[in-house]
Length: 182
Image 1 (spheres, helix red, strand yellow):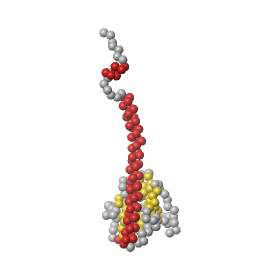
Image 2 (cartoon, one colour):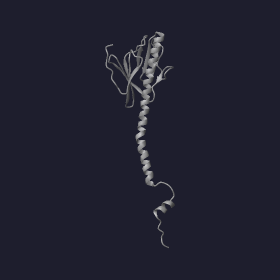
Image 3 (tube, one colour):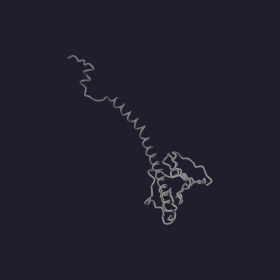
Image 4 (cartoon, rainbow, N blue to C red):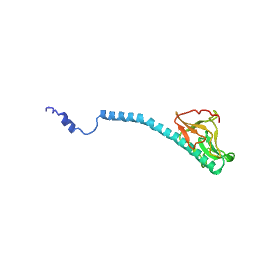
């Protein structure tokens, strides 16, 4: 019996459908490259979102404290507890009645994820990096000019509290504050 020579077209038609090993290896290599590039970016996006959420919460707490000060005619305190990673606002005269607990009370906000307050710079050039910082909001709704520095890993964000403006200024980096005479 003589061997039958089968043309490549017939061989492909008779072979079961599927992918070659080389094709599968190329697809797996492409998927690996895509994941290698995108996964770190997704993690960084989550950290940036946490920093943004922290900045928005600080701005909201400051705005609420200003509104309460104007409505009640009483000074308010914005308390930034660096050890427990929380932000609260209370009436200044009730400060001694309320001790900060590890869990934020009613109007408290716990910083998300791994976000921390690295320090707060004051208008006189001093810096506070531990304990609970007290930002006074006067009866007229003015807050002390200061910069709150948030950190999440290697990411930094600075929130400037402006005394006469209702909003805050946010910078996506650690930015030192220029000391003022006020």
